[in-house]
Length: 233
Ligand code: UDP
Ligand code: MG
Image (cartoon, rainbow, N blue to C red):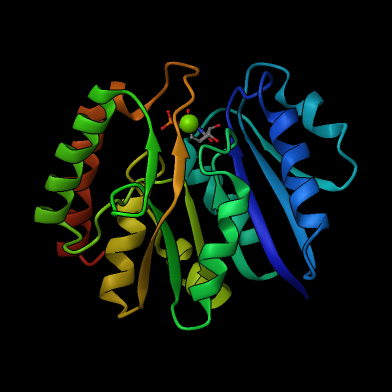
């Protein structure tokens, strides 16, 4: 069995994914545990596949067309062999070195999630993004997951059992899937630890949650609705 699986969802990442994968490999080769890196190509229309295929030590999962980050992460998680499973954005907005901090807690928690909203977080981003993020968190806290300060940071570590259970129940395929996963974690009584990390904003694609705030809000209501209709059984 592999100790750690890292799942990287990738949609049109041809320009930045190679350097990020090299960083990842450099980091993991220095660690004492065994690992596997799984890139899930979420229906990219650029050359992401060709770029990733050059990495012999990285597993590539492919499908077409694009389904959304939530769907991509689930596809990777369900293929992962690791005792622990991390998913990370392809742009490495949270530098991979931050993983050490999360691993420090995973023994005592079911999931350990990176956070941009704690005192010790170091966030480099644009003012309006910070502002939108706060409003979003406020809504999420009121409506679905009280107590989690930042649900959206793309860097989350799970114990295998928890990850499989959660992603098998997941229904939201796009941006709000993090919220759904955390909502379900609370319902299942899982222990969640939020850890402050460094986070750097990198612009790209234009397919960012900021442009999709309204759709996300709709997804948040859908989580509540799904719960009422007992769709998570
Ligand atoms: N992503 C994906 N499918 C999509 C959109 C994005 O798999 O339909 C991936 C993307 O390749 C990246 C992660 O989700 O690894 C986060 O996307 P991005 O960095 O564009 O989001 P932002 O940092 O702007 O929130
Ligand atoms: Mg990003």
